[in-house]
Length: 481
Image (tube, rainbow, N blue to C red; front, side, top):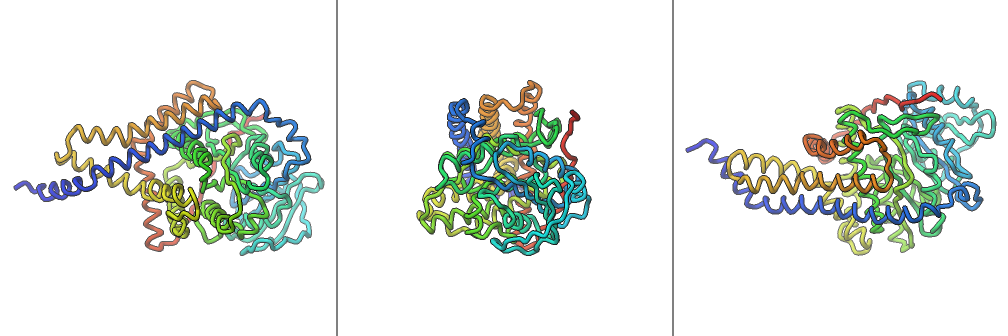
Protein backbone atom coordinates (compact mmCIF):
# COMPACT_ATOMS: atom_id res chain seq x y z
CA UNK A 1 0.00 0.00 0.00
CA UNK A 2 1.34 3.42 -1.01
CA UNK A 3 1.95 5.65 2.03
CA UNK A 4 0.21 8.46 0.13
CA UNK A 5 -3.03 6.52 -0.19
CA UNK A 6 -4.56 7.91 3.05
CA UNK A 7 -3.76 11.47 1.98
CA UNK A 8 -5.05 10.75 -1.50
CA UNK A 9 -8.29 9.45 -0.02
CA UNK A 10 -8.76 12.57 2.14
CA UNK A 11 -8.09 14.89 -0.78
CA UNK A 12 -10.44 12.92 -3.04
CA UNK A 13 -13.25 13.01 -0.47
CA UNK A 14 -12.75 16.71 0.12
CA UNK A 15 -12.71 17.52 -3.58
CA UNK A 16 -15.95 15.62 -4.12
CA UNK A 17 -17.60 18.06 -1.71
CA UNK A 18 -15.92 21.39 -2.49
CA UNK A 19 -14.53 21.19 -6.04
CA UNK A 20 -17.66 22.42 -7.80
CA UNK A 21 -18.57 25.07 -5.18
CA UNK A 22 -15.03 26.50 -5.31
CA UNK A 23 -15.13 26.62 -9.10
CA UNK A 24 -18.51 28.38 -9.00
CA UNK A 25 -17.18 30.79 -6.37
CA UNK A 26 -14.29 31.90 -8.56
CA UNK A 27 -16.64 32.22 -11.51
CA UNK A 28 -19.01 34.40 -9.50
CA UNK A 29 -16.37 36.66 -7.96
CA UNK A 30 -14.67 37.36 -11.29
CA UNK A 31 -18.03 37.86 -13.00
CA UNK A 32 -19.04 40.33 -10.27
CA UNK A 33 -15.87 42.33 -10.95
CA UNK A 34 -16.70 42.31 -14.65
CA UNK A 35 -20.24 43.52 -13.91
CA UNK A 36 -18.87 46.39 -11.83
CA UNK A 37 -16.57 47.34 -14.69
CA UNK A 38 -19.54 47.41 -17.09
CA UNK A 39 -21.50 49.61 -14.68
CA UNK A 40 -18.49 51.88 -14.25
CA UNK A 41 -18.11 52.10 -18.03
CA UNK A 42 -21.70 53.36 -18.24
CA UNK A 43 -20.78 56.10 -15.78
CA UNK A 44 -17.68 56.94 -17.80
CA UNK A 45 -19.76 57.38 -20.95
CA UNK A 46 -22.09 59.70 -19.07
CA UNK A 47 -19.09 61.60 -17.72
CA UNK A 48 -17.66 62.09 -21.19
CA UNK A 49 -20.98 63.52 -22.35
CA UNK A 50 -21.19 65.93 -19.39
CA UNK A 51 -17.55 67.05 -19.52
CA UNK A 52 -17.97 69.79 -22.18
CA UNK A 53 -20.80 71.31 -20.13
CA UNK A 54 -19.18 71.02 -16.69
CA UNK A 55 -18.81 74.79 -16.33
CA UNK A 56 -15.79 74.62 -14.06
CA UNK A 57 -14.79 78.24 -14.49
CA UNK A 58 -18.26 79.28 -13.41
CA UNK A 59 -18.03 76.97 -10.40
CA UNK A 60 -14.74 78.54 -9.33
CA UNK A 61 -16.34 81.98 -9.35
CA UNK A 62 -19.66 80.87 -7.93
CA UNK A 63 -20.74 82.04 -4.47
CA UNK A 64 -23.30 79.24 -4.17
CA UNK A 65 -20.69 76.49 -4.01
CA UNK A 66 -20.51 74.90 -0.55
CA UNK A 67 -17.35 75.72 1.34
CA UNK A 68 -14.92 72.88 2.06
CA UNK A 69 -12.57 72.21 4.95
CA UNK A 70 -9.71 69.92 3.93
CA UNK A 71 -8.75 68.04 7.10
CA UNK A 72 -5.62 65.92 7.33
CA UNK A 73 -3.76 64.29 10.20
CA UNK A 74 0.00 63.93 10.10
CA UNK A 75 2.32 61.78 12.16
CA UNK A 76 6.02 61.83 11.30
CA UNK A 77 5.40 62.97 7.72
CA UNK A 78 8.37 65.34 7.48
CA UNK A 79 9.38 64.13 4.04
CA UNK A 80 6.22 65.07 2.15
CA UNK A 81 4.07 67.27 4.38
CA UNK A 82 5.05 70.61 2.85
CA UNK A 83 4.32 69.36 -0.66
CA UNK A 84 0.98 67.96 0.45
CA UNK A 85 -0.14 71.17 2.19
CA UNK A 86 0.92 73.28 -0.78
CA UNK A 87 -1.16 70.98 -2.95
CA UNK A 88 -4.21 71.38 -0.71
CA UNK A 89 -3.92 75.17 -0.52
CA UNK A 90 -3.56 75.58 -4.29
CA UNK A 91 -6.71 73.63 -5.17
CA UNK A 92 -9.31 75.30 -7.38
CA UNK A 93 -12.28 76.18 -5.21
CA UNK A 94 -13.95 79.49 -4.36
CA UNK A 95 -13.99 78.82 -0.61
CA UNK A 96 -11.81 76.22 1.04
CA UNK A 97 -9.53 75.98 4.04
CA UNK A 98 -6.90 73.47 5.16
CA UNK A 99 -6.72 72.07 8.69
CA UNK A 100 -3.61 70.02 9.55
CA UNK A 101 -3.57 68.11 12.85
CA UNK A 102 -0.11 67.12 14.05
CA UNK A 103 -0.76 63.88 15.95
CA UNK A 104 2.19 63.95 18.30
CA UNK A 105 4.89 63.74 15.64
CA UNK A 106 8.44 63.13 16.83
CA UNK A 107 10.12 64.31 13.63
CA UNK A 108 10.54 67.80 12.19
CA UNK A 109 7.26 67.91 10.27
CA UNK A 110 5.79 70.79 12.25
CA UNK A 111 8.99 72.83 11.94
CA UNK A 112 8.89 72.31 8.18
CA UNK A 113 5.37 73.78 8.10
CA UNK A 114 6.24 76.61 10.47
CA UNK A 115 9.14 77.68 8.29
CA UNK A 116 7.27 77.26 5.01
CA UNK A 117 4.12 79.17 6.04
CA UNK A 118 5.47 81.46 8.78
CA UNK A 119 3.15 79.99 11.39
CA UNK A 120 2.34 81.82 14.61
CA UNK A 121 0.31 80.55 17.61
CA UNK A 122 -3.22 81.86 18.19
CA UNK A 123 -5.53 81.66 21.20
CA UNK A 124 -8.39 79.93 19.44
CA UNK A 125 -10.76 77.69 21.36
CA UNK A 126 -11.82 74.36 19.87
CA UNK A 127 -15.59 73.67 19.71
CA UNK A 128 -16.75 70.44 21.32
CA UNK A 129 -19.02 69.20 18.52
CA UNK A 130 -17.25 65.84 18.47
CA UNK A 131 -15.77 64.09 21.51
CA UNK A 132 -11.97 63.77 21.37
CA UNK A 133 -9.36 61.94 23.41
CA UNK A 134 -6.65 64.58 23.18
CA UNK A 135 -7.32 68.29 22.95
CA UNK A 136 -4.96 70.65 21.10
CA UNK A 137 -1.88 71.87 22.92
CA UNK A 138 -1.51 74.76 20.46
CA UNK A 139 -3.11 76.13 17.30
CA UNK A 140 -1.13 77.96 14.62
CA UNK A 141 -1.99 80.03 11.52
CA UNK A 142 0.14 81.85 8.92
CA UNK A 143 1.29 85.31 9.96
CA UNK A 144 -0.03 86.89 6.76
CA UNK A 145 -3.65 86.45 7.91
CA UNK A 146 -4.73 85.53 4.36
CA UNK A 147 -3.66 81.92 3.88
CA UNK A 148 -6.53 79.70 5.06
CA UNK A 149 -4.37 77.22 6.90
CA UNK A 150 -4.71 76.00 10.47
CA UNK A 151 -2.09 73.72 12.03
CA UNK A 152 -3.00 72.03 15.30
CA UNK A 153 -0.55 70.34 17.66
CA UNK A 154 -1.69 67.66 20.09
CA UNK A 155 -0.49 64.56 21.89
CA UNK A 156 -0.60 61.32 19.93
CA UNK A 157 -4.02 59.64 19.99
CA UNK A 158 -4.37 58.13 16.53
CA UNK A 159 -5.57 59.27 13.14
CA UNK A 160 -9.30 59.02 13.82
CA UNK A 161 -9.16 61.14 16.96
CA UNK A 162 -6.98 63.67 15.16
CA UNK A 163 -9.46 63.89 12.29
CA UNK A 164 -12.24 64.51 14.82
CA UNK A 165 -10.16 67.37 16.26
CA UNK A 166 -9.86 68.76 12.74
CA UNK A 167 -13.62 68.46 12.16
CA UNK A 168 -14.24 70.40 15.37
CA UNK A 169 -12.05 73.22 14.07
CA UNK A 170 -13.43 73.07 10.51
CA UNK A 171 -15.53 76.10 9.61
CA UNK A 172 -17.05 75.04 6.29
CA UNK A 173 -20.16 72.95 5.62
CA UNK A 174 -18.32 70.13 3.84
CA UNK A 175 -15.33 68.27 5.28
CA UNK A 176 -12.81 66.40 3.15
CA UNK A 177 -10.60 63.77 4.77
CA UNK A 178 -7.23 63.47 3.02
CA UNK A 179 -4.13 61.57 4.05
CA UNK A 180 -1.17 63.85 4.69
CA UNK A 181 1.00 61.79 2.35
CA UNK A 182 -1.35 62.53 -0.56
CA UNK A 183 -1.77 65.08 -3.34
CA UNK A 184 -5.00 66.17 -5.00
CA UNK A 185 -5.57 67.11 -8.61
CA UNK A 186 -6.20 70.87 -9.01
CA UNK A 187 -9.94 70.44 -9.73
CA UNK A 188 -10.54 67.63 -7.24
CA UNK A 189 -12.61 69.74 -4.84
CA UNK A 190 -14.74 71.19 -7.63
CA UNK A 191 -15.49 67.71 -8.95
CA UNK A 192 -16.22 66.13 -5.60
CA UNK A 193 -18.54 69.05 -4.75
CA UNK A 194 -20.71 68.44 -7.81
CA UNK A 195 -23.13 65.94 -6.16
CA UNK A 196 -23.65 68.36 -3.27
CA UNK A 197 -24.52 71.12 -5.76
CA UNK A 198 -26.79 68.93 -7.91
CA UNK A 199 -28.59 67.33 -4.96
CA UNK A 200 -27.74 69.35 -1.82
CA UNK A 201 -30.53 67.90 0.32
CA UNK A 202 -29.91 64.18 -0.16
CA UNK A 203 -26.16 63.98 -0.78
CA UNK A 204 -24.33 63.36 2.48
CA UNK A 205 -21.02 61.81 1.39
CA UNK A 206 -18.88 61.20 -1.67
CA UNK A 207 -15.62 59.45 -2.43
CA UNK A 208 -12.99 59.96 -5.07
CA UNK A 209 -10.36 57.98 -6.94
CA UNK A 210 -7.12 56.95 -5.26
CA UNK A 211 -4.11 56.55 -7.54
CA UNK A 212 -0.51 55.60 -6.92
CA UNK A 213 1.89 58.56 -7.06
CA UNK A 214 4.96 56.32 -7.09
CA UNK A 215 6.99 57.15 -10.18
CA UNK A 216 5.06 60.33 -10.98
CA UNK A 217 6.76 63.70 -11.15
CA UNK A 218 5.53 66.54 -8.95
CA UNK A 219 5.98 70.29 -9.12
CA UNK A 220 4.64 72.77 -6.56
CA UNK A 221 2.36 70.20 -4.98
CA UNK A 222 0.83 68.98 -8.26
CA UNK A 223 1.36 65.87 -10.32
CA UNK A 224 2.62 67.10 -13.69
CA UNK A 225 3.83 63.88 -15.27
CA UNK A 226 1.99 60.60 -14.70
CA UNK A 227 4.15 57.52 -14.96
CA UNK A 228 4.07 53.93 -13.84
CA UNK A 229 6.33 53.33 -10.82
CA UNK A 230 8.64 50.99 -12.71
CA UNK A 231 8.91 48.55 -9.81
CA UNK A 232 6.85 45.36 -9.95
CA UNK A 233 5.42 45.63 -6.42
CA UNK A 234 4.14 49.17 -6.98
CA UNK A 235 3.13 48.50 -10.61
CA UNK A 236 0.83 45.70 -9.50
CA UNK A 237 -0.75 47.96 -6.90
CA UNK A 238 -1.55 50.51 -9.62
CA UNK A 239 -3.54 47.83 -11.44
CA UNK A 240 -5.11 46.61 -8.21
CA UNK A 241 -6.24 50.12 -7.22
CA UNK A 242 -7.63 50.68 -10.69
CA UNK A 243 -9.84 47.60 -10.54
CA UNK A 244 -10.90 47.56 -6.90
CA UNK A 245 -10.88 51.18 -5.79
CA UNK A 246 -11.73 52.92 -9.03
CA UNK A 247 -13.97 50.75 -11.18
CA UNK A 248 -15.36 48.60 -8.36
CA UNK A 249 -16.63 51.51 -6.30
CA UNK A 250 -17.92 53.28 -9.38
CA UNK A 251 -20.05 50.21 -10.03
CA UNK A 252 -21.41 50.14 -6.47
CA UNK A 253 -22.19 53.84 -6.72
CA UNK A 254 -24.11 53.17 -9.91
CA UNK A 255 -26.19 50.63 -7.96
CA UNK A 256 -26.68 53.21 -5.19
CA UNK A 257 -25.18 50.72 -2.74
CA UNK A 258 -21.75 52.19 -1.93
CA UNK A 259 -20.72 51.20 1.60
CA UNK A 260 -17.03 52.11 1.56
CA UNK A 261 -15.35 55.45 0.99
CA UNK A 262 -11.57 55.45 1.29
CA UNK A 263 -10.25 57.38 4.27
CA UNK A 264 -7.54 58.73 1.97
CA UNK A 265 -10.07 60.91 0.13
CA UNK A 266 -13.69 61.28 1.20
CA UNK A 267 -16.03 64.25 1.62
CA UNK A 268 -18.88 64.47 4.13
CA UNK A 269 -21.42 67.03 5.22
CA UNK A 270 -20.12 68.38 8.51
CA UNK A 271 -23.54 68.46 10.15
CA UNK A 272 -24.07 64.76 9.40
CA UNK A 273 -20.61 63.90 10.74
CA UNK A 274 -21.44 65.68 13.99
CA UNK A 275 -24.83 63.97 14.11
CA UNK A 276 -23.32 60.46 13.96
CA UNK A 277 -20.37 61.22 16.24
CA UNK A 278 -17.46 61.41 13.77
CA UNK A 279 -14.83 58.73 13.32
CA UNK A 280 -14.58 55.92 15.87
CA UNK A 281 -11.04 55.98 17.38
CA UNK A 282 -11.43 52.37 18.53
CA UNK A 283 -12.07 51.05 15.01
CA UNK A 284 -9.24 49.74 12.84
CA UNK A 285 -11.30 50.12 9.65
CA UNK A 286 -12.49 53.59 10.63
CA UNK A 287 -13.40 54.71 7.10
CA UNK A 288 -15.53 51.62 6.43
CA UNK A 289 -17.09 51.80 9.90
CA UNK A 290 -18.00 55.47 9.44
CA UNK A 291 -19.88 54.87 6.18
CA UNK A 292 -21.67 51.81 7.58
CA UNK A 293 -22.74 53.82 10.64
CA UNK A 294 -23.88 56.63 8.37
CA UNK A 295 -26.05 54.24 6.33
CA UNK A 296 -27.53 52.59 9.42
CA UNK A 297 -28.30 55.91 11.09
CA UNK A 298 -30.05 57.47 8.11
CA UNK A 299 -31.89 54.27 7.18
CA UNK A 300 -33.25 53.95 10.69
CA UNK A 301 -34.41 57.56 10.56
CA UNK A 302 -35.95 56.93 7.13
CA UNK A 303 -34.16 60.01 5.83
CA UNK A 304 -33.70 60.17 2.04
CA UNK A 305 -29.97 60.38 1.35
CA UNK A 306 -27.27 59.53 -1.14
CA UNK A 307 -23.68 58.30 -0.81
CA UNK A 308 -21.84 58.48 -4.11
CA UNK A 309 -18.48 57.89 -5.77
CA UNK A 310 -16.90 60.02 -8.47
CA UNK A 311 -14.31 58.80 -10.92
CA UNK A 312 -12.98 62.23 -11.84
CA UNK A 313 -11.61 63.76 -8.60
CA UNK A 314 -8.22 62.17 -8.06
CA UNK A 315 -6.09 61.75 -4.97
CA UNK A 316 -2.49 60.67 -5.47
CA UNK A 317 -0.79 58.71 -2.70
CA UNK A 318 2.33 56.66 -2.16
CA UNK A 319 1.63 52.94 -2.14
CA UNK A 320 3.87 50.58 -0.14
CA UNK A 321 7.16 49.97 -1.87
CA UNK A 322 8.36 47.15 0.40
CA UNK A 323 6.87 43.76 1.16
CA UNK A 324 6.90 44.32 4.93
CA UNK A 325 4.88 47.55 4.75
CA UNK A 326 2.44 46.05 2.24
CA UNK A 327 1.96 43.05 4.49
CA UNK A 328 1.05 45.22 7.49
CA UNK A 329 -1.30 47.31 5.37
CA UNK A 330 -3.25 44.38 3.95
CA UNK A 331 -3.40 42.63 7.31
CA UNK A 332 -4.78 45.79 8.91
CA UNK A 333 -7.30 46.33 6.10
CA UNK A 334 -8.73 42.84 6.41
CA UNK A 335 -8.88 43.02 10.16
CA UNK A 336 -10.82 46.26 9.86
CA UNK A 337 -13.11 44.66 7.28
CA UNK A 338 -13.92 41.76 9.61
CA UNK A 339 -14.46 43.90 12.70
CA UNK A 340 -16.75 46.29 10.86
CA UNK A 341 -18.80 43.59 9.14
CA UNK A 342 -19.20 41.80 12.46
CA UNK A 343 -20.19 45.00 14.26
CA UNK A 344 -22.88 45.64 11.63
CA UNK A 345 -23.94 42.03 11.13
CA UNK A 346 -27.52 43.09 11.87
CA UNK A 347 -27.62 44.62 8.38
CA UNK A 348 -26.85 41.29 6.68
CA UNK A 349 -29.85 40.11 4.62
CA UNK A 350 -32.00 42.68 6.43
CA UNK A 351 -34.63 44.09 4.02
CA UNK A 352 -34.89 47.16 6.24
CA UNK A 353 -31.66 48.37 4.62
CA UNK A 354 -32.78 47.75 1.03
CA UNK A 355 -30.12 46.82 -1.49
CA UNK A 356 -27.44 47.57 1.11
CA UNK A 357 -28.64 44.75 3.36
CA UNK A 358 -29.68 42.41 0.57
CA UNK A 359 -26.83 42.93 -1.91
CA UNK A 360 -23.87 45.05 -0.80
CA UNK A 361 -23.31 43.74 2.73
CA UNK A 362 -23.73 40.04 1.71
CA UNK A 363 -21.31 40.66 -1.16
CA UNK A 364 -18.66 42.00 1.19
CA UNK A 365 -19.10 38.99 3.46
CA UNK A 366 -18.88 36.46 0.64
CA UNK A 367 -16.45 38.05 -1.82
CA UNK A 368 -14.27 40.30 0.35
CA UNK A 369 -14.10 38.74 3.80
CA UNK A 370 -14.04 35.06 2.82
CA UNK A 371 -12.19 35.55 -0.48
CA UNK A 372 -8.64 34.91 0.82
CA UNK A 373 -9.69 31.80 2.72
CA UNK A 374 -11.51 30.26 -0.23
CA UNK A 375 -8.90 31.34 -2.75
CA UNK A 376 -5.92 29.89 -0.89
CA UNK A 377 -7.85 26.82 0.22
CA UNK A 378 -9.09 26.12 -3.28
CA UNK A 379 -5.68 26.65 -4.84
CA UNK A 380 -3.86 24.42 -2.35
CA UNK A 381 -6.48 21.71 -2.69
CA UNK A 382 -6.34 21.77 -6.48
CA UNK A 383 -2.54 21.71 -6.57
CA UNK A 384 -2.44 18.88 -4.06
CA UNK A 385 -5.09 16.93 -5.95
CA UNK A 386 -3.29 17.43 -9.26
CA UNK A 387 0.03 16.35 -7.74
CA UNK A 388 -1.54 13.22 -6.22
CA UNK A 389 -3.25 12.36 -9.49
CA UNK A 390 -6.83 12.68 -8.24
CA UNK A 391 -7.53 15.80 -10.32
CA UNK A 392 -7.47 15.43 -14.08
CA UNK A 393 -5.44 17.71 -16.29
CA UNK A 394 -8.63 18.97 -17.92
CA UNK A 395 -10.27 19.93 -14.61
CA UNK A 396 -7.09 21.53 -13.29
CA UNK A 397 -6.81 23.67 -16.43
CA UNK A 398 -10.47 24.59 -16.11
CA UNK A 399 -9.87 25.72 -12.54
CA UNK A 400 -6.85 27.83 -13.54
CA UNK A 401 -8.82 29.39 -16.39
CA UNK A 402 -11.78 30.32 -14.19
CA UNK A 403 -9.71 31.44 -11.20
CA UNK A 404 -6.79 33.23 -12.82
CA UNK A 405 -7.11 33.59 -16.60
CA UNK A 406 -10.59 35.05 -16.09
CA UNK A 407 -9.15 37.39 -13.43
CA UNK A 408 -6.50 38.59 -15.87
CA UNK A 409 -9.20 39.17 -18.49
CA UNK A 410 -11.23 41.20 -15.98
CA UNK A 411 -8.22 43.34 -15.11
CA UNK A 412 -7.44 43.92 -18.78
CA UNK A 413 -11.05 45.01 -19.29
CA UNK A 414 -10.65 47.47 -16.42
CA UNK A 415 -7.43 48.83 -17.92
CA UNK A 416 -9.14 49.19 -21.30
CA UNK A 417 -12.07 51.14 -19.84
CA UNK A 418 -9.66 53.36 -17.93
CA UNK A 419 -7.48 54.00 -20.97
CA UNK A 420 -10.42 54.87 -23.22
CA UNK A 421 -11.99 57.09 -20.56
CA UNK A 422 -9.15 59.08 -19.01
CA UNK A 423 -5.88 58.06 -20.69
CA UNK A 424 -3.80 58.96 -17.65
CA UNK A 425 -0.71 57.06 -18.78
CA UNK A 426 0.24 58.50 -22.19
CA UNK A 427 3.39 56.44 -22.80
CA UNK A 428 3.14 53.13 -24.59
CA UNK A 429 5.79 51.84 -22.22
CA UNK A 430 3.53 52.57 -19.23
CA UNK A 431 0.61 50.85 -20.91
CA UNK A 432 2.79 47.81 -21.54
CA UNK A 433 3.90 47.83 -17.91
CA UNK A 434 0.26 47.93 -16.84
CA UNK A 435 -0.56 44.89 -18.95
CA UNK A 436 2.42 42.95 -17.59
CA UNK A 437 1.42 43.88 -14.03
CA UNK A 438 -2.10 42.56 -14.69
CA UNK A 439 -0.58 39.15 -15.41
CA UNK A 440 2.05 39.20 -12.65
CA UNK A 441 -0.60 40.08 -10.06
CA UNK A 442 -1.93 36.53 -10.31
CA UNK A 443 1.47 34.87 -10.08
CA UNK A 444 2.41 35.22 -6.43
CA UNK A 445 1.22 38.69 -5.44
CA UNK A 446 -2.42 37.75 -5.19
CA UNK A 447 -1.65 34.66 -3.15
CA UNK A 448 0.68 36.58 -0.82
CA UNK A 449 -1.86 39.29 -0.12
CA UNK A 450 -4.50 36.62 0.51
CA UNK A 451 -2.25 35.08 3.15
CA UNK A 452 -1.59 38.46 4.78
CA UNK A 453 -5.30 39.17 4.87
CA UNK A 454 -5.83 35.85 6.64
CA UNK A 455 -3.17 36.87 9.15
CA UNK A 456 -5.15 40.02 9.93
CA UNK A 457 -8.37 38.07 10.30
CA UNK A 458 -6.70 35.52 12.56
CA UNK A 459 -5.23 38.31 14.70
CA UNK A 460 -8.69 39.75 15.20
CA UNK A 461 -10.28 36.40 16.04
CA UNK A 462 -7.57 35.62 18.59
CA UNK A 463 -7.71 39.08 20.14
CA UNK A 464 -4.13 40.06 19.36
CA UNK A 465 -3.38 43.77 19.63
CA UNK A 466 -3.12 45.65 16.36
CA UNK A 467 0.39 46.96 15.67
CA UNK A 468 0.27 49.76 13.12
CA UNK A 469 3.94 49.86 12.24
CA UNK A 470 5.58 52.60 10.20
CA UNK A 471 4.91 53.43 6.57
CA UNK A 472 8.29 54.43 5.18
CA UNK A 473 7.96 57.37 2.79
CA UNK A 474 10.38 58.34 0.05
CA UNK A 475 8.54 61.55 -0.80
CA UNK A 476 7.21 62.69 -4.14
CA UNK A 477 9.43 63.02 -7.19
CA UNK A 478 9.84 66.79 -7.15
CA UNK A 479 10.73 68.64 -10.35
CA UNK A 480 12.23 72.11 -10.10
CA UNK A 481 10.63 74.90 -12.11
